[in-house]
Amino acid sequence: MPDRTVLPDSGRLDRAYRDCRRIAAAHGRTYFLATRLLEPERRPAVHALYAFARTVDDIVDASDAPSRAAESAARLDRIEHELRARLVNAPIDAGDRPEDPALLAVSDTIRRYSIAAEHFWVFLDSMRMDIPGGPQYRDRYPTMADLRDYMRGSAAAIGLQLLPVLGTVVPVANAEPAAAALGEAFQLTNFLRDIGEDLDRGRVYLPADELAAFGVDAGLLHHCRESGRTDPRVRRALAHLIAVNRGVYRRATPGIELLSPRVRPAIRTAATLYGGILDEIERADYAVFTRRAVVPRHRRLRVAAQELATTRRVNQN
Image 1 (cartoon, helix red, strand yellow):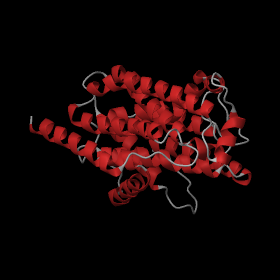
Image 2: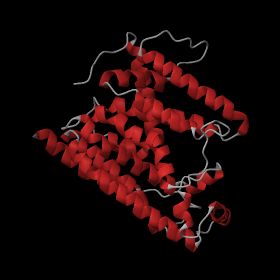
Image 3: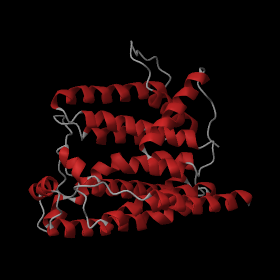
């Protein structure tokens, strides 16, 4: 069982967790819906992990303006410094800055569930790869291996952070490969869905060599964004990458059975709905440059209802 020790100021901590829940509800519709299928005592920790990742992601996105890059890098450094200090109960000089609720809640979650802090340092290192002008900056990925090196921190680490919260029926280490793969599958889906938005930020999160195999380069992607039309070569490349993405889901899905029975419906819901984004991209004939593929609300609710019924049966046993 996780450590239930709380910080002395429990009211402040409770407010921080409520703020994290609002962040998750506002920005992570699929994850938030899936989280509703978890036992109530697990939900705050999942909200805290999501809110922390979202907070860092927003800081990185703000760095796209050249004048903001140095500030964003400094904010990430400060977040890492403060998180490290909180995890060893060291004094923190916050000055006049308001306390970050995500930082307060996630540090409590890490302690409660004995989550390996290394997963957070790897995550922050990957986020630094998105800050222009920084020593780790990358705006292109020559191969899938290069992209997976980035996703090791940006996606796989998120799955590994969640494992101790969700619980497993095997030693945690045995469930880690599948959890990392599911994080990677979600991230690849994001990259395929958000090609247009990423291009606007000057980034391409698709492996150049696999695009080149279909005659696609960054210039052609920008042309598609500007014209609002998906070139046939790009369509074929996207079809290939969607197939690759589905292969990662297939590799990850058996790992759901390694989780605690009560959390499996929630994770199946997230995997089904996120994988459904790929269906929507295909249904729209790969029109990723003019629209954001979204699983229709009626389908999200149907999948959640089916898994809710499963959750109730599990809880009755």
